[in-house]
View 1 (cartoon, helix red, strand yellow):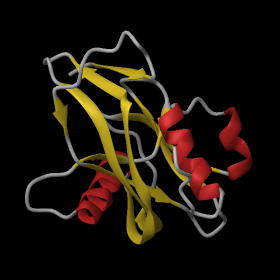
View 2 (tube, helix red, strand yellow):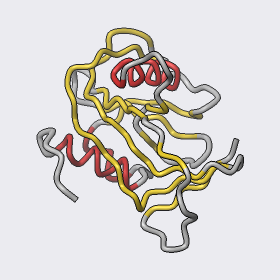
View 3 (cartoon, rainbow, N blue to C red):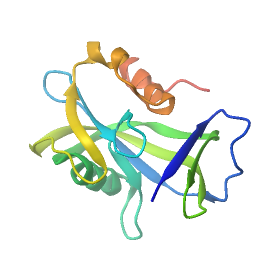
View 4 (cartoon, rainbow, N blue to C red):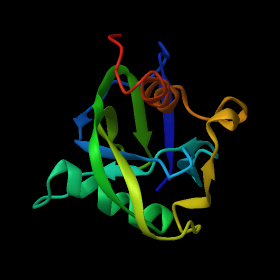
Length: 155
């Protein structure tokens, strides 16, 4: 299913759903951040996705990380809750979603980065390389909050 992201775009369609989702910002022992390059947008992003019935937000973050990156991780903390009514994702099936994400901090405990049907590349990014990567503004905000000592800034 295809998708189009709108970020602070006055021409964005009106949202018709709000789905809880979770991200996991995984940092290895050397301080590098795990990112995946999404097949649908070509941009680098934190692993994450929609929460399923029967799982907690943190379980969702761990599951999505493993599914999307091949890396098994554990939650070590909470970065923040991110929702922006001006960040809209329209899917080809007619769903138009306002983004809502709970972003956790984590550390790797197993597995290895691998591409899959959602990500055509997965890698550890040293912090100094993040500025040169094509990262969606909503993900940049979360990374900036992490780099600012894990203190989400009001928007």
